[in-house]
Image 1 (cartoon, helix red, strand yellow):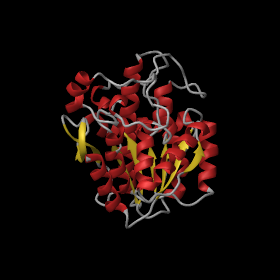
Image 2 (cartoon, helix red, strand yellow; image 1 turned 135 degrees about the vertical axis):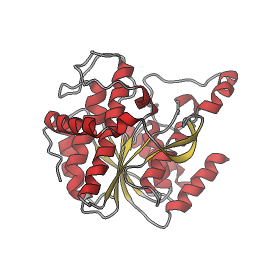
Image 3 (cartoon, rainbow, N blue to C red; image 1 turned 120 degrees about the horizontal axis):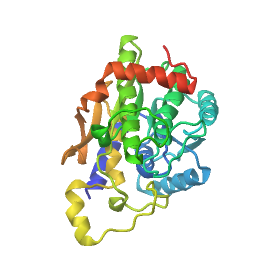
Image 4 (tube, rainbow, N blue to C red; image 1 turned 180 degrees about the horizontal axis):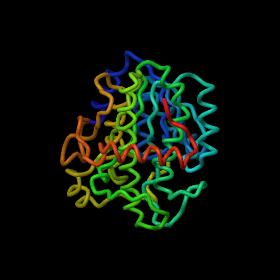
Length: 316
């Protein structure tokens, strides 16, 4: 019931406006529920994903649920954030299409214990989660800066609280350390981007949002692939009850991202996440990230490094 009430509230909140929204990684996980909820609210959603098959499954799932509320069928954009060539092609196609009001930089690698690199030779977490979105947003920025009120939403993570920034070669750290560092980089970039936007008085807002603790086992079923590396079964009732105060499904984890993308009162540079239990569950609320996420000198160095590695000039 609380999910239905929340969705009703989201729909009422944004029904007066219809935005053109790009959701990277919208074919599974948190991104799927972000796309579903925004489509349910009447927005024009484009799912950017590597796999056309997964994207078709996600679009079909959203369309099948259309009987429950008015929604537009999402579109699809091929995009592999681990490939700079794919990013360049996708950006060219998007720039040739309708203007974008919101880009939700959601896609990313969450778990991969093997030591692998992107197709361009970068450590897979940093290369996909941060560098891929840096390159994409840089290429899309000419369109975004011409759209008054445009918004960029970066997907942060509570894991940034324990990150120890090191931009090393693949395999220098364990997979979770690499994930933490990539998410801190995402957040440093998101906050630095908004500082630069404000300094140049551009009508675009850059914000960061995180989903709290949203494991697959608490997520309502959809006919789309799980985001986790291995398929998670249902928890025994006793374990589920014990974890309930600290866990929510990916549907609820999508709420702060949806809020950051579409609500009226979302200042540039703000940070959003669940309100309860150390920001692991609950309704969206404005929060404060770790001090490292706001470190401007580190963010400026990261920006310079990102431009060098991607070969994309992100200046304005």
